[in-house]
Length: 218
Ligand SMILES: C[S@@+](CC[C@H](N)C(=O)[O-])C[C@H]1O[C@@H](n2cnc3c(N)ncnc32)[C@H](O)[C@@H]1O
Image 1: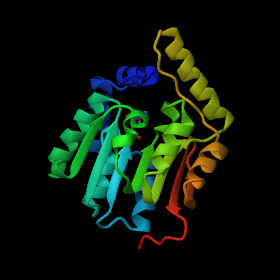
Image 2: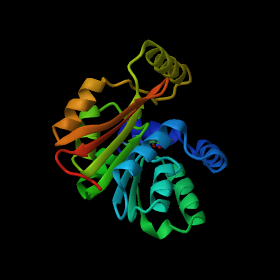
Image 3: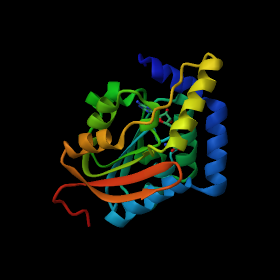
């Protein structure tokens, strides 16, 4: 993996963090905003669908959608520790053979990643500076549905992200978080023929599902 932010991501989401997140997922299930995204995708229809989950962490979306009837999943994840945790989770649920894992920066790996019926980026856009490439290349691979969870542009979220980045700076950590403008995200997604089907907010996150224009998923 070449990009500096991806090296920083590898350090940020290490084995300790992955183990903690896996334990939390096993105990409590998906995070609230993740569950909102899963429910919205299920409402659109996921039976027999292929999933491309980018930056899926411990694999909550993969596990939940495969259990709910999705056919196969491809996971592209920049953290090796998270891939290990997602594999462990998939193995425990008996569907590890239905998930293909790629370790690295999705933007770099994109030429070798096939399109899928559903593409998801759950709390990933905020970890990557090059919005145009990440959202452009991923939304271009969504045949039916494109689901994202990313930070709202409120003052409290911007303040929180500024504090996270300040802490990283003070600890000499290269990791940076980003609050990208929703308008820019929306414009890139729409340019790939997708339109909004679902929108909801939590205190921090916005959860959005886009569908391919004119196509019904059910
Ligand atoms: C904040 S974590 C979220 C993990 C999980 N989706 C969740 O919501 O619990 C961000 C994840 O995105 C991954 N990530 C960020 N940029 C990425 C990229 N360009 N390619 C692949 N994975 C990426 C990180 O490795 C990390 O697993």
